[in-house]
Image 1: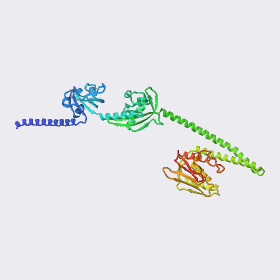
Image 2: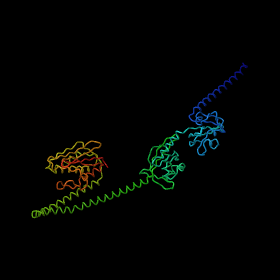
Image 3: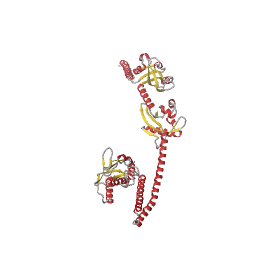
Image 4: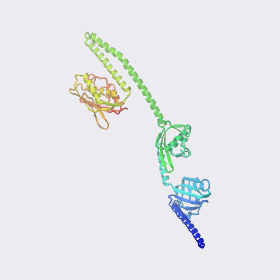
Length: 506
């Protein structure tokens, strides 16, 4: 038995060694299979930089057979060119860095052609920390470089200053408009961060804002009318800016596109417009106050003229010569007409000054009430009125009542000579709701329609129809304040139709 123990032990040892070698072969086969199937070029070297392994993708990229390259120095076969800059291979193999990566180089292939690549080199160390070689990975970035060129051309064609920056705020790209705006060359931009384009007091706060934006990058506007955003040019001067930020997701992380516009001229124009509006508003208020004051001051002498004329007519009317009596009556009629004119001017002034409020208004009910009052004031008239149902609008009830009073009073007045007077109030459907007031009265010549809504402009002699020429001007002001429009269609002797739209608060 003892004689068999020795051979059994040796056999067990041999089996264990064979099992270990089998495991190593399986591991090696798996490693080789994985190495050969890598989608990028991979090269391993020894500590001196001589090539030990080369993947098929590396062979394809370099344009060389692995058998020819293995044993040769990596610097001989992996030729990276970029205007004399130190490539990542040199930085690691010469001992300057443990890890280096760069996507700015072109690979010079064996046939003399060049391919833009991204190259990463990592130093390999054993369990004791001793350097045993390097791993070189090479990726063809032709498609990515083409996309980058397209992106650069897009930035170059943009009408605004455009900057591309990374999460650390470093400026990666800048178009010509950015150079024109800030005064930096594209090469100078490459050494700057976004904060360098801001006034110094704003820089620390912007770092925090940029960090916050990086946590939730969305399209957003900056430097609007309510926020003052300043930029700092190369010469130190500051300019107001409006900026639009857009995130750009890339393989290397989220980048930020900044579209920047100098709003100096816009701000100046806005200020000039605001100043002009303020001056116009002040002038309007002054003119309205003046008109209101003058109108009130004119009332007293007009009342005196009317009153004394009435007194003369009552006391001396029978004894006055007919011609003098006619003159006196014309004086009183003129005074009364002037009084009505002042009332209409004051009404027009109130229409301009009153604050507009919006509500749901039953136009049909308003028209019914107005027509009832007109019948009470003219009991001898027979006028057929037709008011459509569901005439509802959004607007100011007080002002819309004034507008309809003027339109219906005009229709009532200009149908006075018709045997069968008719007034229709309704609406027609279409792209927008259009309301109308139609009558079969005197009408007018459309050649003069442009004067219709101007103050004091009359299309009929006062001897035929009384009035001051203010009513339709008032209606137009009211409709305009509601964001609507008004127009008319008519024929002499065949009546007129006034159309108007309403859009609520203007």
